[in-house]
Length: 137
Image (cartoon, rainbow, N blue to C red):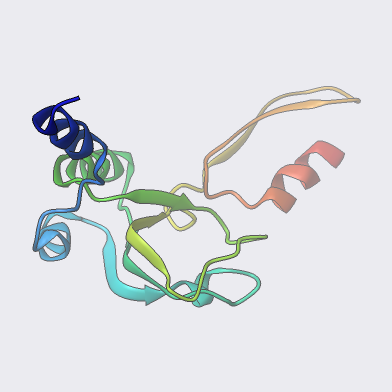
């Protein structure tokens, strides 16, 4: 292998870093609430974890779609955090965007129910105990 090929392969495998200033752009784009450097210990049941670069509470599905497209365009890593149960977050926190869906995405509907089972449709922000309780009824 020649040096140019090795350099090319290394460049392809190098992590892509987000563009500078993405947090301010995110704040201007989001219609929902944005919290910069938000401690994740406030959002986990174990109450541990360092800050996320940005935590976003999307206003609705269109807002979430636009923000995920933004994250891809700017090469910003992202993740979705549900209710924070059984989640361990390192003290160093999380790089990128953490989307918190519990405030907006909480629609829940029982579509069909028999004596032995229930078919439900639940968005990502619905707490699991609510779904389990519907199955018991």
